[in-house]
Length: 108
Image 1 (cartoon, rainbow, N blue to C red):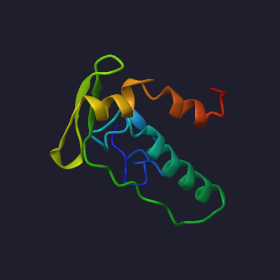
Image 2 (image 1 turned 90 degrees about the horizontal axis):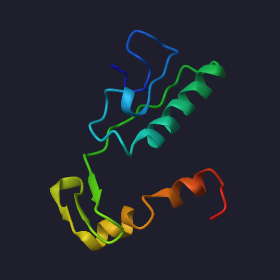
Image 3 (image 1 turned 60 degrees about the vertical axis):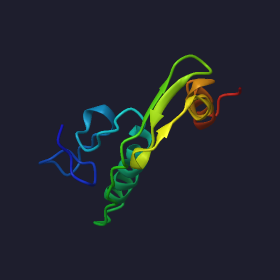
Image 4 (image 1 turned 135 degrees about the vertical axis):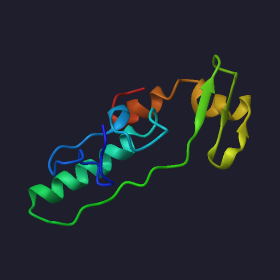
């Protein structure tokens, strides 16, 4: 779905789209949270009657492919290749579930 830099659906001023459905960012899987913060700020502004909106700027593509808890590879922004040790630290140990548990205030 085509969206504006403010993450509203093209042709609408009060319908927002984030994550995989929003055709604004090639790096879909890891960006929904960042987009949601922008959309939420813009919805709050709209509800308050404020015309000012925040724009989302897509990040450079990143690929993180864990292969088990201690393996994997990836490509970082700028094209740098990430090895197994870094990928394991970033995602391989818990598939980033700890990050989401913290965001949702779920005990570890």
